[in-house]
Length: 247
Image 1 (spheres, rainbow, N blue to C red):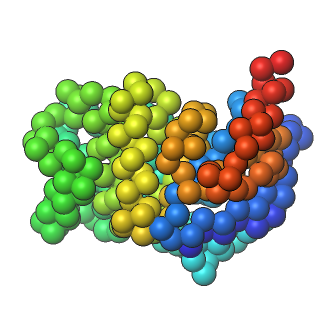
Image 2 (cartoon, one colour):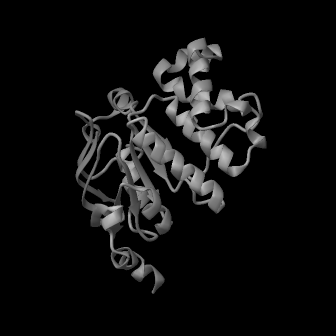
């Protein structure tokens, strides 16, 4: 479902954040990327989602190379891809249901935004996505009253409202307590295994990767350090990712 080939990102100041990066995430697979600060983890997700334009390389979303597109063609081509950030970034004064429904705006264009609403079917679907993350009972509650873990689950429901086939998550549990972090990781794994999404998640928490990921990809200085099933990954290989950071 997602294939990254020879991805290189060189910034104008000459810094190389990614160097020939290779990665595949299949439908139904939960892949976690681990690496130290400055290793290129977030740059990788920003390139895949085309927030950044990579210097060279290919980003295949099913049969379309996102790296070769721009403008309206890019916007339409990446609709099957959704992103979850470290911060939920909900509109605090609006209801939980309303926040989730905004995930559908990309499929309906600016007209519905101007009219101030979405088709009723989208609101019903948003309620269903809230049920999938276990928060249907909070649909009418203001988003600003949620706990951190609840807000992140709403952000995931909003991403699901895009009807994605690929879900990217950038440090989605970094600001959560351990219990809430486990809930989010279990949810992401469920979305891969039960909803058949291709889920790619950047993490800093090594133990969560071992517990929940199908595969773990290590990144160091912008290149792949390892790519292995989590059950076969020696801890020494993971430790080496963080040696230079600790020094």
